[in-house]
Image (cartoon, rainbow, N blue to C red; front, side, top):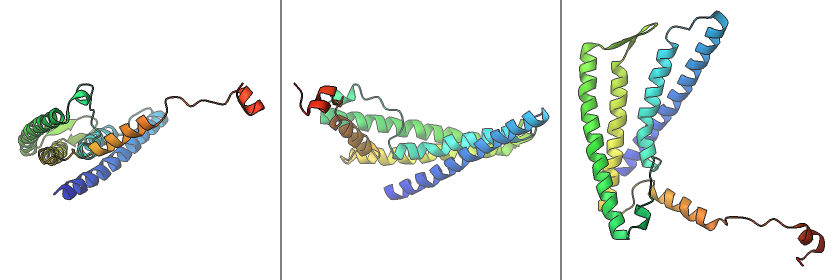
Length: 193
């Protein structure tokens, strides 16, 4: 199951990266046309907005798999192993509850938007309901990651991405704070006097 979730998150991350490229191209084309003609190219802003929603929504699960969401550990770093485990279980249960609620609310919103044929009026009429489904898919994928992480915490494993953070922290501790540079005396005399 975890392998499947990682695969889904990776696929969505690739789509997120493609959306970022599309957003950059749309904005660059719009700026070029606006500078050349004095008028915006119809549809470019809408394409950029759509790509931005896709990039953010589809990046949620990948960030969850890699432990790249914002985390503040000032308090939990001081906990014993038992309390750290209890805190992890509580936090991931809360994330599961919250993302399940967000997913459910977004499914209802996407259904309503699709039935109404919701569009955005700008320079062009742009359908909004597909982006409601993209956002919903992003939340559902994050929910799946949260469920896997909750299960991992309940079975005495670290959440996905956590080991990478621990390795990075250990690597930081192994690095000296300051590296002494050789002084002129050391270089010239071969030894410090």
